[in-house]
Length: 220
Image (cartoon, rainbow, N blue to C red; front, top):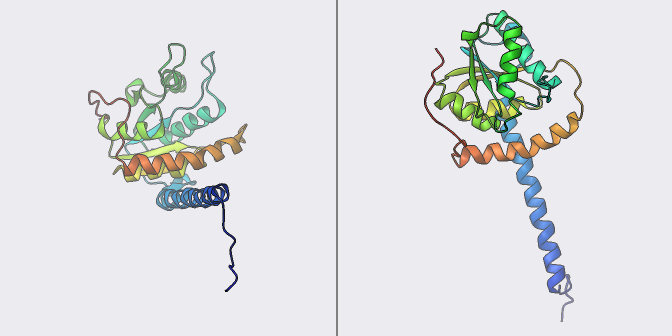
């Protein structure tokens, strides 16, 4: 009788093998999704102002603000980059999208106050108080603010996902790098972004809806 190549496995051994097999499949899926997001978003990302196409609106995505209403380094750099785009004639309007779910925490109003302090006209600033994540912000930019072409000013680690979402939602979107310094815990942000890319992929393919829609506020 021929000798068996593989010994007979008990229930726990089979379970462990199945666990490792599923883990490998999951890791491969995450890698492939991240490659897909990058392949769609990366071609529309710019680092040189003169090569960047013009757009009607720049989207400033929210990030942390401190209790005394000071912008975090990351958020200040996004706002400053948007101002540079405006002064260079690349955009005409600002869409500020952030989190305003808590009474004492308001990313959107804090960014608006900063833009006004930098002599940006009030009529050029549009506020989205329900931009709870990047997907919601871009979905609402399209459906509530009726934006068609847009430049997204954010950090390099975030740009591929933001542009991927915008493009997949049908926007004529470009990304412009807002990195102006080194950031604390940047590797944590980069790691989280790998998982956020998976969420973005499923948001698009499952046609997820934002937490809030509401009345249209067209940016003119």
